[in-house]
Every structure is written in C-alpha cells, then in structure tokens.
Image 1 (cartoon, rainbow, N blue to C red):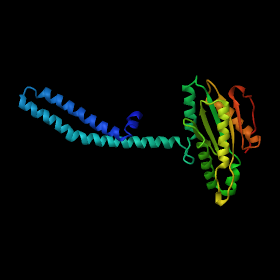
Image 2 (image 1 turned 45 degrees about the vertical axis):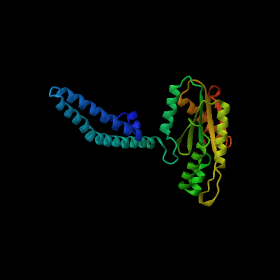
Image 3 (image 1 turned 180 degrees about the vertical axis):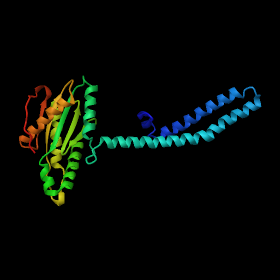
Image 4 (image 1 turned 120 degrees about the vertical axis):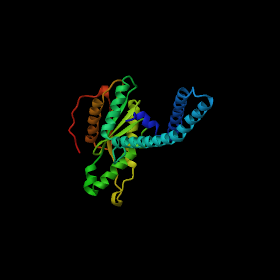
Length: 260
C-alpha cells in the first residue's frame, strides 16, 4: 500500500500530470542509456535508429500507462481520504466522533506540553429527553444537528468540536485564557438559545449547559475531561442554560450527583 502522503499528493490533477510526465521521462532516460550501451558498437546510423526507438516507444507505451496508473492512484487517494473522514466523523452532526476528538486533543496536548494552554468545554443539551418524548427521536436528531451547527458558528479556526455521545459535545479551544474561554462559552450558549428549532411547526427553545476547564502548560485529556465534566453537571444542578468555568489549578476535588 502506498504511504498516506503519496496518496494525498495524488489527490490533485497537477500530481497526476507530474507523475505521468516524470515517469515517462524516466523510462525514456533508462531506455536511451540502455540502447546507447548495448548498441554503441553497431555504428552511428544503427545507434541513431536505436536511440530514436528508445525515445519513441517509452512515450507511446509509457505515457498512457503512467497516466492510467496515476488516475487509479488518484481515485485511491480520494477514496482513502473519504473513508478516513467517515471513520472520524459523527454521521448525524458532522462533528468529530468521540474517538477522533479524544485522539486529536490528546495528540495536541502531548506534542505541545509547553504551550500557552487552552480550554476544554463539555456541552450538554438541556431537557433533551423531553424533546424525544414529546416529538419523537427524529426531532431529537434534528435538535442535535441544530445545536452542533450553533456551536460551530462560534468557534475559531483551529478549534475542535466533537460529539461525545448522546446529547453531549466537547470543544477544545487552544491558546485561550479563562476570560476568552468564558466569552466563547457564553457565545455558544446564546447561539443555541437563538437557534430556530420548530418540530411539527411548533417553535421550541433550545438551551445547553456548559462546563469548562482552563489550563496552562502540561495537561492530560483525562484530567481535563474529568474537571470539565464535573463543572458541566454543576451547571445543570445550578439551573441549566448556563456555563461554569474553572482553572485547572483552582479546581477543588468534588463529586456531583448527575441529573438528567
């Protein structure tokens, strides 16, 4: 199997042209060198004819072959990229799935231990069971897509959002302090409040509760998740439709009883 970088490079038409051109020229060069070595003692006229054939035949045969192979590899590259995207994406909300989100954030944290820090937010839809009970699961799925879209409209380039399961989402914000993280969390909350959700023609307000943790320096995803998750359920116990943010260094060891 070709390396992933090769497959990605073949994704573009310019790469197909380059592979076809350089592959053909390489065949021509090898053929000319071979004929010059083998038939060099047959005289100038014979050598000239052998050189011409050494140039023409690779072009006539090699160019179509390399073009065909490049097109097939381009198709393979596109298929590979699409399969990778499907494997990493939640099919309903088009966010990263839990595994991909966890892996990406963990990789970022491991590769940049001395970074300026960031924040992890856990976001949960309020009273989601009531939507399913009143309007059915199709409406519940629609509500999740509306919430996911509302979250994405607020995020910056480089921020990550994933569906952690059920009606819960995770957001990773690199390079933010607590003030900026709180501002983003509040904008997400308002964006969901203002989103249009009208199952069966009935306008129904949506809201989310958000728990977040801000950190600096080294951090592990497991620890950030634990703190943000506790803050999330603290926000729900405090009345929902709000956010609760804490700095990792100031987080007290608490255990909260989860509510729906």
